Length: 403
Image (tube, rainbow, N blue to C red; front, side):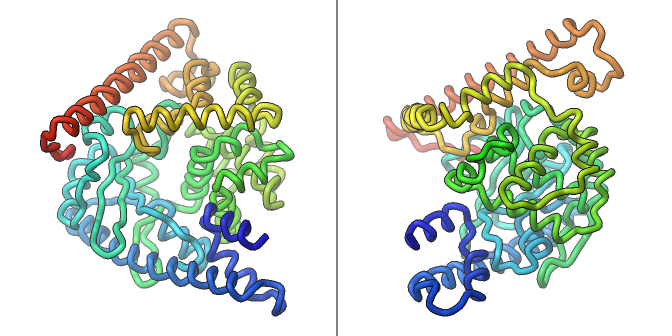
């Protein structure tokens, strides 16, 4: 049994949290070997996060010197502020958000701070056109990755997030021994909902399922739900009216609502009923989304379909040498269903119009633009992978994709 517990804790990055929990349990319940392994995970997380703090401090200092305002998302601030202890929340990278116009200068800052392009990644120009962040590797010490964002999620989610406003509202806080610029509490909580929904679609599309806790646990995304709970615990006086208004402005009311319902289903943590009522009138899916949800996430189909999709995904990754974090990985079929068949209110917000009459005209404009973006992105991706494969076969030195 304990071997399975340790495996699930590692998969969900919950080892340090489990260590803190079992410390208060009576002696003899948890085997000494299990305690040692969890304690080791606790210490490793603490040491790694301290190294991340040092790197983030260096980047923040260089941003200040360049007169730029970058916002650090999740990660360090999450571990220190929401969890109250940098050893309790393990994370694998540093997420830095800047407005689109500041991306070139921010990349220069990361380069001067020691960041290099990940060799197996696509070119920067590809990510600029078809994604929402680029990566830089800092190999010294911890081998950290910094993701430079200009948006919080992929274009196909149809979120209309005011990035400039988010950056403007961000505030400087002390994180451990350093100071970082982080989003305000409302932006931070909605961002956590978006992040959890992106990595674990079951949260957004299947919140009331009896098997949801088991599904999230086995998929390795329990820590995302714990993040939401910790955020609410750290901000008991958070403005729910402002969260509802901001979620509607960003087109994320469904995501926030279903995240709150999933939080209640999995951990028993409830948001105020008034907040749920403000969000719930828009918390629904269109007919195509409903059909796809049943097909992909219903317990009657999940296991068999999951195995089938797993084999297909592994074949694609092997055939084209694609990494799991390839640019099209976040574009799930459910996202595309919502993108290509939006409701009138979503379309009106997307084009910043009070109405979209005639609907057919605006829908065709939207769908054709999306189809063109999707097609050109797929062609560029396959072309890039094909060229890299030929280079490897013929022993041609591969040019740095950042160049």
